[in-house]
Amino acid sequence: MATAPMLKASGLIKYFNRGTINEVKALNGLDLNVAPGEYICIIGSNGSGKSTLMGCISGTSPPDYGRTVLDQQDITYWPEHKRAGLIGRVFQDPLAGTCASMTIEENMALALRRGQRRGFRRGVGNQERAKFREALARLELGLENRLTDPVGLLSGGQRQSLTLLMATLIKPKLLLLDEHTAALDPKTAGLIMELTCSLVDRNQLTTLMITHNMQQAISFGHRLIMMHQGRIILDFNQTDKARLTVRDLIQQFHSAAPDLSGLLSDRLVLG
Image 1 (spheres, rainbow, N blue to C red):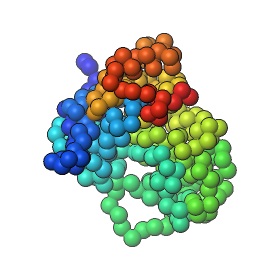
Image 2: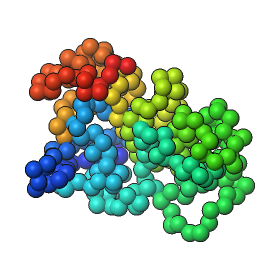
Image 3: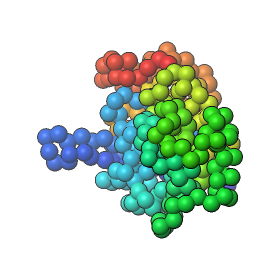
Image 4: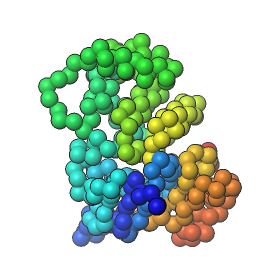
């Protein structure tokens, strides 16, 4: 018996500025099935609909038409906060996923209670503190000894590592990574990708990762999809992806989207 998809997006259509001279059709009938535990890299030109797709899935920007089903629940029009217990998300900006004025352990406590009813409780108990210290120790950044430090004191790489850990602290049904290494220097980006693979593999997380780095898209994950004008135009499985080179990817992209002028000028990078 075939396993049901963890994520099924069907016929997603999303407009911005609809009915005006600035109308944009960001998603154009997009279909996507994602198997449980599958790790998919998403590439495409600027304006291809990558982040809009993540917005539709996460609830920050619901579609105008179509359906989104996560773990056999139709979440198409669920508000973002209702999806929070099911979906973890990490953004490009290392500052976006944490609160600078709160301590490391307070930020982690919020992540641990994601999707639960919010009360007045803000304190961290000894049992939670031990759990946080154990999880942080795996990062090998020494953060397990800085639980009471404000997050604003951390470097960009440390903060993004913490954000990634927080997004997976309660195993989500789906992990969304929206160019989560793009704002980091190459060395730090490499470390974050190592951490990403470790967390995804250890927890067998179903993951969608947007990247503009073609070598990164080839090297990581089980599947690679290309988007253009709000649709998926190419879809490589793990076997096909393993045979790809960056040159192949450029040629395939230009063949599938001949109207696209200047691939590299559109922020897709060689890696």
